[in-house]
Amino acid sequence: MCMRVFITLRVNKLVTALKTIYKSIWELGEIGGKRGLEELRIVKAICPYCSVGCSIDFYVDSDKIIWLAGSKDSYINQGALCPKGVASYQLIKNNLRFLRPMMRTGPKPPVEEILRAKSWDDLLAVIKKYPPNWRPITWDEALEYIADRLSKILAEWRRRTGAPVHKDGYFYVGRENPVQILGSSV
Image 1: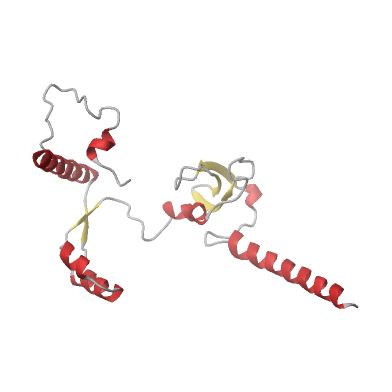
Image 2 (image 1 turned 90 degrees about the vertical axis):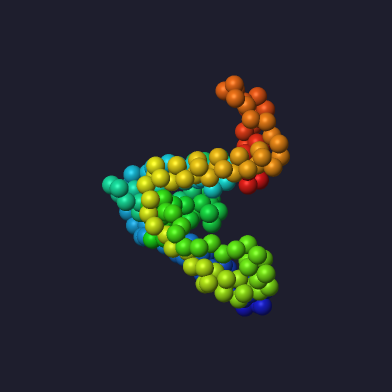
């Protein structure tokens, strides 16, 4: 057997082995086994993480999600999912997921202390000095708190900038793009 044939056979064998390892690790995932998927009900959804709009097939047995995969019939993602799409299962089932609104009761670290941290260890020391404590609250309490904080922030902003306050019930400036007035994370 010549060296070229020998190397070709070895490379083909390696590629086949890597394909099976890849499939067993990534297709099985953390969600659960994938035996008998053809008997399960498929619920189609759109991935919520970005604006691409990849289609996801959730394989469901009564109420329980058994498996998810990219929709093969989607012309957008053609069966492929990015790591965020694969992890979208954790939006539903995750031990760290909050199931109700939580209010922070522990003290927040002063911004000056956070900015003074020169290394990761310094930042961790600041975080350990001010551990967050949380208590569950109702949705009404959460929305009331958010509305109160937002009105205080807007009142302070208006006071500092001299922005007009409309009293006629119609907000002319920014009525089409209120995010520009309120501010956003972008």
